[in-house]
Image (cartoon, rainbow over all chains, first blue to last red; front, side):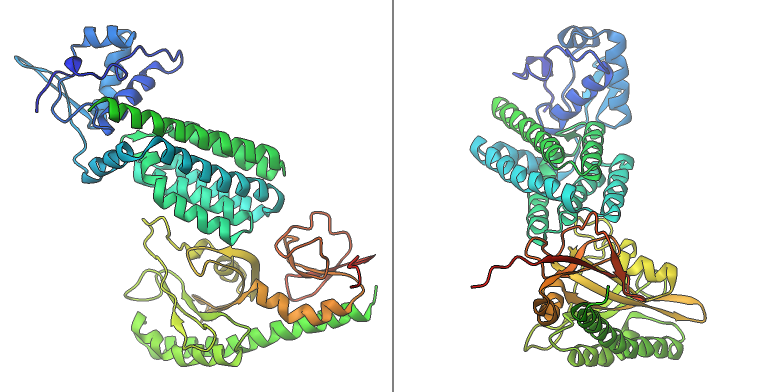
Length: 250
Length: 234
């Protein structure tokens, strides 16, 4: 099971990191995501530091910081001596394999359908919430978002994010939209919040949701809807990307 | 502004609410008696309160959709959280409401944060919440009436009754329809509980309600408008 990652067709994983801000985090995310998606398997050895830094177009300082962060999260380990190097420790969570299989097996039209439906439900819920949310509803939304912000595990994030969308629908005063949102969350929540490979940076999600709450509080239905649709489109786009990477890795 | 139609709506609202709370008082007495009788208050002891819950449901038949006791965390010896809540489906025996009390679950029914629990806990007074979307519980647009249960200053939880928002509106239809001018019943946050205006569905917010006639001790007000209801005759 021990293969050299650099020999595998995983070009996208090691494509140059071009995001100017927070390069360490971008590298951490890229590698963590690849591990979550099973693109790099348990026991795989990462290319040597210099080689990997060159491939990713980051400095070795950046790469070392990223590897240290991955070590801290228990996703890689460094062995010293002969045959040493950095090795992948894939999460043993059996649900990870099941989720990867699901994401691989969903067709792009099915993924698009999920996005279309989520967008219709969550977008409308956000618009109506801006017209109907009480101060108490807004306070609850901020409370749930605080939980998302403070979450330390992917499970907590999935629950808090799901809860946020459900609370928006409840603030819209619609039983039907709330029910639909609960169904959506149980269907796609675990895909959006893959262990070690969330479809969105949690901080971006918190920032985006904060803007939605602000729009709801400011009673700006058009903005609440647009921001929500944008967020959902981005999430689905990421899932499509994951899907294609899984297909390409076969 | 005194208007006989407003008076009729007000009277009807007070009567309906008094009936609901009056019926809940008997459940409340039963909870207190049960707590005093049990050395170590456990979940199974609440079976003694059930006859009063069922009696409440049958007294308020066709008004109350569910009723019961929601216990404050830490009060029962063997359960951290507990809902002894029964629903009354039409023409059927009451059914126990089974909600997800696992804090780890997406559907977790976090009732201690719910207004119908938190407000009576804080104020030690009766409260009415809604209309609101009750999700994780009954998945219905609901009004919830609750009263605190306490013994020697210790808060045991609340007794409560649920009334579907649609049913509550129906109970007021007669007096609302009789008025040629707009009469709107709003809750403390300005949300429409019931109205005879075709442009204001229940659940919408009245952002600038203008003159309100408060209905103490209820957390509600009546908003009137001299405008006629603009419903064209058939």
